[in-house]
Image (cartoon, rainbow, N blue to C red):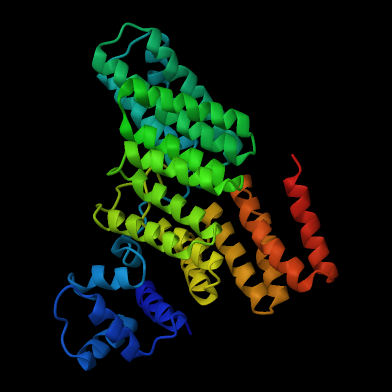
Length: 408
């Protein structure tokens, strides 16, 4: 029989169970967290039971409940997905619009041209989560050359700043795609270019994302102190922009890998509070906009590293649910791959080798992937498998698949 409760109600119940709370425990925790009087304990218990059955919490309760569960209201009670179905995201991006191409060839740089280029840059960034990476990289490089080339034209000061900002946004995207393929040198060059464009345009958010990329590069290379330094540098230049949430998440991931649980929790909480105060994004698919659902992805990583397997598993299942549409199409295949690796790690720790191997294999099969990030989490699963089941032939076969991915 299909589950009739809304996804948020199922999640509230699952998170309570993952924490080992009874309804009374949950009511007490909520009352302790609430900034104002919430009513008697038995009354709050009945409210909680109603939430788990599908009765929507009121406006005052939603942020308190989300905070108690370590997430944000926009992720616990998300807006419906906005993406149109059946569209090729690269072909639909306006990249080959004849009129725009003609304008650029003729050297026409007016407000309409710059606006069209901004739409194209946004559509490219919105295709990042699921479009074929190699194809998107070709298009990103093409548009970066076109836009950066406009700097030699006769421009007003405002137009020059806009061209530099657009160049920075495209360089960020190109750098991310290059890093996904394992081309670290090219990715770093693109990142530095983005930082330079941001300085010329006075664009704090582009600069913040360039520092966030450095934190990501350092994290996946095992340089956790370097990741912390990069995240702090980004927060210095863009403390109130959306990128600050992801910078806090990179801090949390680095602290978690250094075994500093309290620091990781503090960084996550800073990011959560920032994100809670931001409106729901118009386009959560945009790679340089923080999708509220991604906060659960950040927390999943930290819980797994802390050995909090029940919470990590609950969040991994939530990441998979949020990253897959009603007909089974994966909207966030890279996040989904890491969620499956988390399920693999927790299964290995619980003695379920078959499930651990199945999740690990499926993650490695993902067509749209970021190789450095996938390798980082895959190695964590590999460590669990070696430690617990190293003599098993199936484990050796899985490790061979991982070694093949590690080879350039």
